[in-house]
Length: 405
RNA sequence: GGACGGUUACCCAAGUGGCCAAAGGGGACUGACUGUAAAUCAGCUGGCGAACGCCUUCGGAGGUUCGAAUCCUUCACCGUCCA
Image (tube, rainbow, N blue to C red):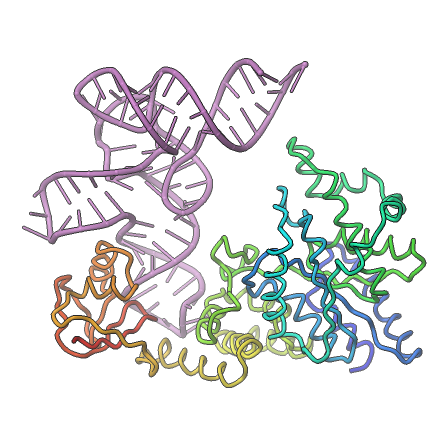
């Protein structure tokens, strides 16, 4: 890729809430790439991760995907684990105070975090650093120097602090340190580029750049990524809203979850979670628009790309095959979990024992709604007894190979 | 420290003595249709029971009453205002 193509690729999926700013960053990136090219070095890119939770979903991997793109273009990527900053808890994406974690919790989370991250990042080419390395040595005197670059007003105009201020909720002094610490990370790493989500706009644009400048370095370029919506296609992906695509699942589930996003969300997903380049994505979008490419096929490609990134090409192809067989053709998949029950058991009880229903009422409801099939035919009677081997199906996607004993 | 307001099912939210297992919306689930677990439409959403019904649930505990999500006391938490 030439430099202009690189810029286009690396800026893909970014969101600054302001076109001018975006253009400015793109321009800085172009110049920095040229400079590095002349100097015969690569860009130093980093992104900090807060190990505040253990199980990640697709939304968390958006910055990682971006780092991977940098890696593929040959740049130097550092994965910073914010074990020191997470002792504070980033106030950025919350309008309430975050709980502070203990050192043990942070360490445990950091391990699982890195493990999941390396499904996307190239482990050979990634440097892992913990920011406690340098932050724990920062003296109070140095902290004061850093802090002197900022005014209270700057923090108070920041959306999430402002909201809390207006509501009369507490804004603690230590929460403002977070930005300073992150700026110091960027300085210590001599970063050329810093990647983050929209919630990091202030931290990166204001704090990091200012601190680097103050410390005599060229400010790093901010790559601010847009927000990935959940499976509803609208609201930010989050586990608590139940619209997330977890990383720790299996290829078939991931494939299916991606297929369940609304058609209109495909574009964002392509831009934020795949390795496809802008021309490739443009081709897909034009294809769908002109009717040449079926939206279903466009989404199947997306689902395959995403599941392949996490589970490998082979698993993704299998997941796709399963999807086609089960949903498009309505046939029964090959790999079905087996389940043993006492001969003569009532379906209702089997459904509960197998975890396909939470209660007898729920099981009956499923039967009443014609959602339960045995050997392909709908069960009408809740008192149906299972006396022989057969396939029990609930809804479209739950199958059990039943063996009465 | 004081004065109000709030706490209802997975989430939001109505209900202010019996007709309340509790309106409405969202989500989840099932069905139809289809182009997919998209969209749309329909159903459904405490437990036990084949069923008349019974049991548990409206922040916790206690009380008034034939009867309480609803009234009283008290405790906990959240919010707004005052100090």
